[in-house]
Amino acid sequence: MQSKAPSSRSAGRPPDPAKRSAILAAAQRLFAEKGFTATSMDAVARAAGTSKLTAYRHFGSKDELFASAIVARCNAMLAQASDLTLPPGEPRAALIEFGHAFLALILHPDALSMHRLIVAERERSPQLGGLFHAAAILPTQQRLARIIERLALPVDDPMLAAGDLLALWRSKPMMPVELGLPRMTGEDIAAHIARAVDLCLAAWTVDRRG
Image 1: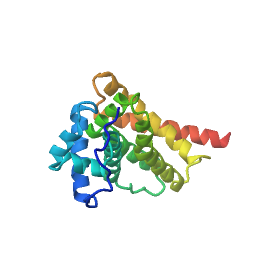
Image 2: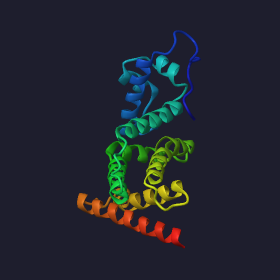
Image 3: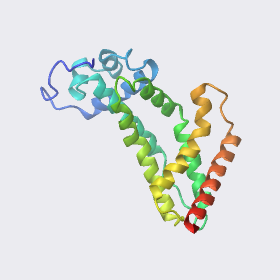
């Protein structure tokens, strides 16, 4: 059962954006360290240097705080991935560059921690998967689709093509992470990224010719 706010968020002074940011930062850290169940609103408020009442004024429940923390972390990570400079006439190089940025993003400790939290909470809060998809996965796919369009690659559906390439990039490096096996080396990851790009470029060309 989710924790309910002890009073309405509309009561008292208007919410302070600085305090909201502090609460979100504390929540992200504590949820990552302790998980959802072991993290209380009291603990988040103390870590943020504020009161539980203030935390509830900004976030009506622990569920809402958890969801907001996920969206905020996704937005922060995506903001760090700057737009790529596309080498003119070099689609392979541009896609490989994006692949390196993508895998650096999803293999970052913060991203892995968030993924574990969502998987752990998927039965209790199934909506979190949708939040993560909307805040992180979909924007990344849209960004790659725009690059595919700008490169004038021979695809009929840039979003579908982007999804295929992202899935290829993610699958092999993530498997050892999820199974607790030795991770791929940087050299292996670079070769994997290039191989996936070559496979997709060849497949897209064949599809268009067919």
